[in-house]
Image (cartoon, rainbow over the protein chains, first blue to last red):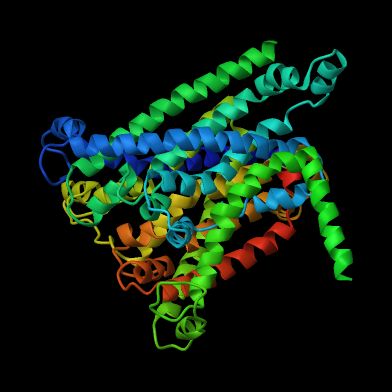
Length: 269
Length: 297
């Protein structure tokens, strides 16, 4: 058959293309890493001398540790709040059939389809109008507006695969609503909730456009990196960037493994 | 008549609150009212304030909007740049992502696909600044590309801080936003249908054009919309990689709010941008059934 041969050629082309696209995505991340381990104030390729000076300088900087703790605090609070709101939202999005569902599904997407710098500025005006001073708390709120819809979608994907008859069965067997939620619904949706939390944390950790306008004096890592890129470059920029990337990668690896284990356990049960 | 509609609103509100879905949707609605609707309403208020004032809803003037369109400023150029760049990047990304999506859905096994999706999701978690800065290290003077060229005996191209570089940066930043919806779209296409079309003698191109693409279209459309909207509203790419060689609209908005302290002007620009993006989004949303797109994947 002639088209299997052509099919095989297309297959190879697609595989090569995918590898190429992945390489494109990771190229700048690798460049950051290279620059962080080269000695000297200005990056020169090929690297003449490797050193971890910038790593130790960055790790020991007091300014940077305060940035990191701000970013961590914001990301932590955003994760908790957005996951709780998004869990309810995901049930409304995918579990129940109700009258306003189609409308809700679209409204919740609007913030995702909205440019973040403009949203950040709008929130700035709003906070200013109602007399709230900018701080890490306002940044948390700003992050929530954008991150909660994303987390809702992530959890909703899990909810679509949920079999509602299991809840009915539990009810028929005499379980209370609380028992049903705690023993049936939540455990089955847990992988989705966990992925949602991971998304929330990491998206908040890396967010720049919303933080730019809403953090006030409480600087975050992405904001600091930006200000140094625009003026006053130091090799700490790629170094901190690489550190943050590695941290996120580690967290994601642990998180993805956990989700994988949950799925496996559920598959067996 | 009014009494009737008030009653209607009241009854639909009770229905909303008493339904399980409505109760669950409530926290999201509260968040979006306070964090999305109200701020945008503030922006709208400011856009009608007298230029250079610092309070909304106390004065009324159309000057801010007139200034945008009467040609006395060059903001219309920023609008054109933003839209043109976004359209260009959207087209490029659709072409770049489609084959990858086909690979993820039909060619790589499910384990490999999961791994590859993790590889594509991950960059979203790294601050865009950091990733864009990596390109400066790659393309810059004495950077990776320049260094490799010098080893080969010639100077590297000087392409940093050009409009083309901004476009590359946008394509780079928004690639995952195109890829994942397109994957969902391609997953909607039943494989049997393609086999059937092929068995009945349809050519590869025709099968793709008449069977596969129309069925995958909801996903492709969402991807294109998302990319276009986000690229139109992006700022970092033109600032970091474009080196301000072109001014995009968000940059103008940013400048009005910060440097030139003309909030009403910035608000009016934001309103026009929101209208462009919002009408496009609402139009596309009308045509898409999200249950179908997400439920099956």
